Amino acid sequence: MTQTTAVVWLRRDLRLRDNPALHHACTHADSVLLAYIDADDERGQWADGAATRWWLHHSLQNFAAAAGAVGRQLLIRRAPSMQAGLQKIAAEAEASLVTWNRLYEPRALERDHGIEAALRARGIEVQTFQGALLFEPWDIETAAKGPFKVFTPFWRRCTQRLPDIAPPLRAPPKVGERRRKSKPKLTGVPLASLQLLPSIRWDEGLRQQWLPGEAGALRQLRLFQRSKVDKYSAHRDRPDLIGTSRLSPHLHFGEISPRQVLAALTSDPSSHAESYLRQLGWREFAHHLLHHFPHTAEQPLDPRFAHYPWSRSRRTLSAWQRGLTGYPLVDAGMRELWHTGWMHNRVRMVVASYLTKHLRYHWRHGARWFWDTLVDADLANNTLGWQWVAGTGADAAPYFRVFNPLTQAEKFDADGHYIARWVPELASLPAPLRLAPWRDATTSRRLAPGYPEQPVVDLAAGRDAALDRYRKLRAD
Image (tube, rainbow, N blue to C red; front, side, top):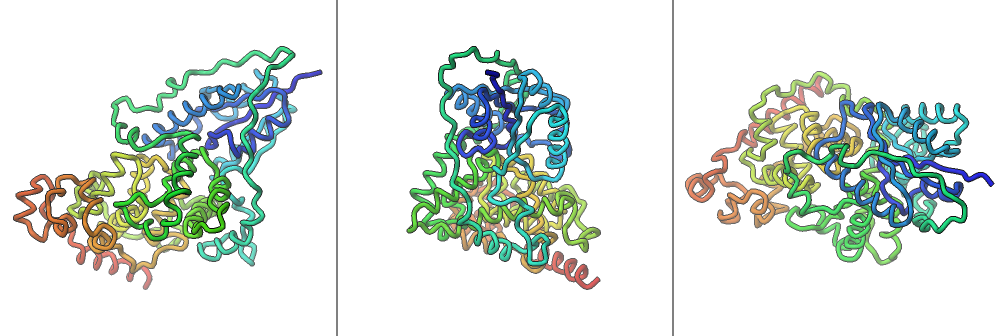
């Protein structure tokens, strides 16, 4: 009897559980090879940022160990292109089947279709699967058979179909002893050769905060399910509390699937998970939008903003990046980001609004900075978030919505605990001054000498200038 071999091409699906491509390969082939390819054709304008590369190193390392424990080999290869790398692996393995879980960025889909055609031309069966989203972007349509541009009706349509989603798949069984001789293992490159870790070790904060990999994702889901999901609605906007799921990087790397999260949070009828499931809906919406409007990673969805007069100064942009704007909530968020590779979602909206409206910088400046510094940097989510806050995208915030960093701090960090943690030079100030140290310059100068004495821009002046430009844009 001929022994069949399948190759599972892994990208952002580094998990054993609920992995449709892996499940199909293990069901339909005698021998299964797991392959990860680092290819030059992936290093375009949206090549992985430094924080993403750090996470990817540890995610691959932990996945290889988990796969090895159940008798599966993870082959890591470098190649000039994904197509060349995958074809070479399939040929060496004498594979009759290649499987993968689909990615939805238009460039990735176009590339993958080409790879599929090339493999089929060689007589190799190809099967691809839905493993990253709850719904395919082309399956959720308006009544007019077009893409949604507003979240609420989009999510309403999705929730009607949530009961039809199949339960998560189990991890494949451990490979048993084979009576016939197995094919020899292929050789790859060591993980270290991908050079994903920083040469200058700035990653101590990331190592303290995160456990990349499937085990870390499942642990985080259990923690959220047991102790936080019922309080999510009340605590989700409080940056001084750990009230969110912190699953976003695990979802991005596919260490856990949205189907697993959905199943876990809806298994208990008494759970108050609706508010969090809506956040999963925003993730779906982001991928839906980028698939249908691929230009939005660089250009505004609203064409009126194509010639908006954004600021060209570099001075205040640097202050924003370094967390030295003089507005403590903004600075705390930017320093949390630099130290941990993550930022609380409420604070993300505040710092984004401050950059695009008070400082009037193009949202691409913020999107690029987040791309390099976030461990959960996701092109679809990043694009949606920045265009939403800037008012240039789908379901955008009204042009007159300008987040005030002071009133946001007073509402969501009233005692300044979050600010004191990430801007420690302000910790010795009385709580009210932590939020607005410029209100008592003498005390602030004495107790927090290293912090800016005055903000880089006056809140009222910045808001008025932004609204004036927005009104002119809308009038044209």
